[in-house]
Amino acid sequence: MVDWDYYRSIFPVTHNQAYFMTAGAGPIPTPVLDAISDRYKKLSIHGGEIFQANLEMVERCRQEVAKLINAESEDIAFIPNVSFGMNALSSALPVQTNLIIPADEFPSSIIPWRKAGHEINLIPFSPDLQSNIRTALTSTVSLVTSYVQYSSGYRINLDELGHNKKNDDAMFAVNGTQAIGVFPLDVKQSKIDVLLCACHKWMFCGEGIAFLYINPKFFKKLNPSIIGWRSSPYAMQMSIYESRLYESARVFEIGWSNMTIFAGFEKSLEIISTIGIKNITARITTLMDRLVVGLKNYAIPTISIDNTQHRSGIILLGPFDNLDSLLLKLREHNILVTKRGNGVRVAIHFYNNEADIDHLLHVLRS
Image 1: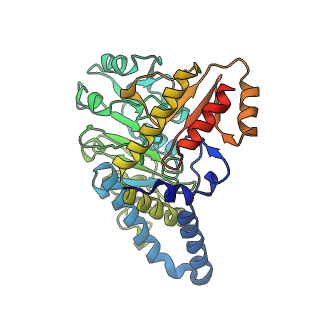
Image 2: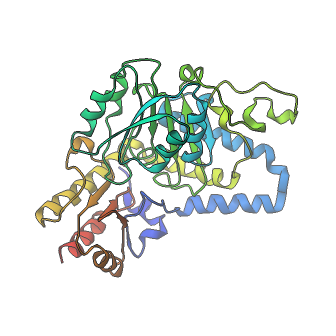
Image 3: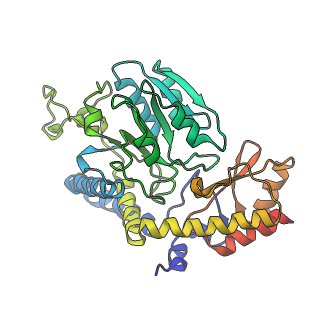
């Protein structure tokens, strides 16, 4: 049995407030903060002497991420953020592509594709988003979608879409930022070609790290235009004449990374692995169910679609005519949420508890 009280205790952000802002910023737990601080101390004392240890740390993180999504470690690249990954990918496709993308996607999943000249068809948000995407998946279109939508919290059934792809030449790209680390994802089972994820939110490792997975068969279709000195398996030779590049996602790992954040990332991956994704999913589902029941009982409106099959750790409440006043009232009661449009976004992680949910409901009701 998971000791949820213990895991709550290692997140200082929970000690004096109900924190529901994970979808925007994941707070750093004490063990992650300690790992980051320790790495800075080592850098201060040993300097470049820890160079090899840094490389080994990155490879351990790569292996753990691969386990998390059921991929091979050589198909994982670490990148600074999802926007970088989307730009790298959109510029690497040799031909312009006809894309379908949900209309309520986060901008980083849309803007780079539009700038690169790809044709974009937006699928409006509705209770039938899943079936509308499935219907639009003809043999000539590719799909870019989030696993969980950042605003509404709508969770896509990736397995269904992956198995309904009509053409192996079409691309199935997923932004997993709002789900990986809390909901299971299997790139092989879902037949995902490309997966990107920013790790500073639900994986609570600190800012400045994301990862990119590319299916090796799909990678053969790409012509990478964004490369750097670490894009080669022979990078440590420091040769300007070595032209051989990685034939995998790692070609996009172009330069030196923020190794301090990797120290935190390794610890956050350890915490997630120790608890287990199934336990995390169950915990979040239980807390979200409690919130949804309370919202219905108190007739508090929601913008998010109330469908358990597509429920996640995010729910959008509203619309509210007195939104700014409501946000101020919540803050006065030490409840931290996020304003999205004319609604209130609530993001629930495993470090929340029943008291957080009940406190939120009490203030909303009043």
